[in-house]
Length: 501
Ligand SMILES: Cc1cc2nc3c(=O)[nH]c(=O)nc-3n(C[C@H](O)[C@H](O)[C@H](O)COP(=O)(O)O)c2cc1C
Image (cartoon, rainbow, N blue to C red; front, side, top):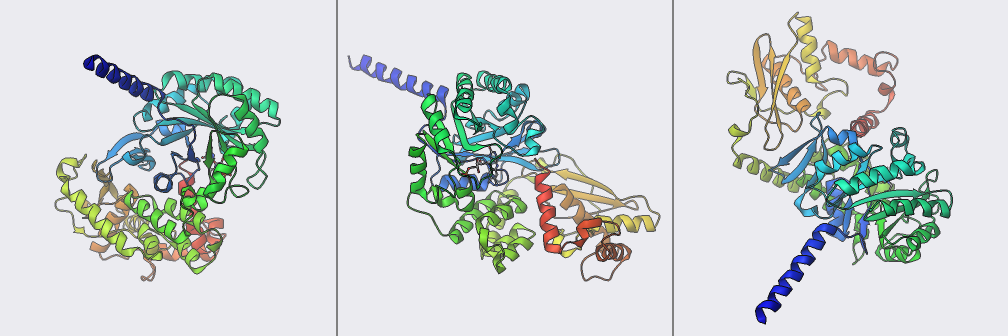
């Protein structure tokens, strides 16, 4: 009797486990961080989870871009990174968010969408398709809000994903001109087998300042049986934690997704109440440093949090920051940065470098200095590589040749430059190929006793030429040279991030 009862209970537990596995992440009664380009990177997602969000969506990433990425396990950071051919981390995730991170995709093609989903199958909890983005870069490729007028395409994409992907599939839409049209589209979507649908209660031509149509979301929630995730309530409705529940009940939805209110202050997810932005910024920076977040992305997110303080001294300093170290200094976190950098370096050293180097460079005789390239020490349009190239041209030498290796352990780079048949390199490793090459160029210039193009250094021809271009906007580099330096730098940052989309 005892054994058969125990067997029965075990069987029931097994069935429950299987059901949970099959069904995966549930979207009922959840508070969710919305997908946000540039904002929804790993530090923000982890912070949202720390403060109480149940599910976090990543920023929208386009299928074609993801398919070019390779999956790399970073043993030092303990992350899984999807890295572009230009060695940029496009999507980064870690154990802490496993089971709660939803990957949002921009797609207009069922086959590509499924290929991306398969690539990410072991690293994310669900896949979402963006059907609400009204921006031209999305719609011109038939993605985002362009899908709203193609129910046939929506069905094709979602059915392919639901049938081919082992985890839940969701989609995020905007509302159509009428309630009836929106409800009939949502019913088509429901039939594809998606686990939930997020509804941003604005029409595609409406801007964030337009009032959110709670009545549309309510009508949708009442018309379908899958969880409806209400979205669009920031600013007008959601200003503190309690408002999330109010938005949920006004819209009769199952769950709520928050974007801008969380971007401005992610502690909106705290049941215990919102925290001061100073505390939130420190918490954010800790995650950004821990996961080697690119400083331009960290800067962007912190600017959103500072909002109306951007013109303050602090805001201006943030604008001008050119590295994670500088950002930490601005917010009084220098010792945290230094300690953590030492800790990471020690971790790196605890692995054997020799076995990690993927390509061997014969650099034993190369002059080696402990050198790093600091962008802020140079004029915006002058780099050591350019100075070295100009010098080689002037001396009628062959162009410098850079040989760069990457170690798989942490994906850091090391470059050796050959000039006039001699090799030069820094002993330090860098986060990017470009930085490693600049460091090698500096070692070469320094060893040869040549100017490096640094601000304040005796001017060489190249620096002189660039300065002239900056003083006379119509010469050479055009409009960019007219801008104040801090603004131009920030634009450069923006461009490098945007070009990743
Ligand atoms: C900076 C920013 C980036 C956004 N990026 C995305 C995105 O990648 N995918 C998406 O579906 N929606 C995106 N959105 C829209 C939001 O997810 C959300 O639908 C919208 O802001 C309304 O919600 P809210 O009132 O809570 O802000 C973005 C919004 C902002 C402010």
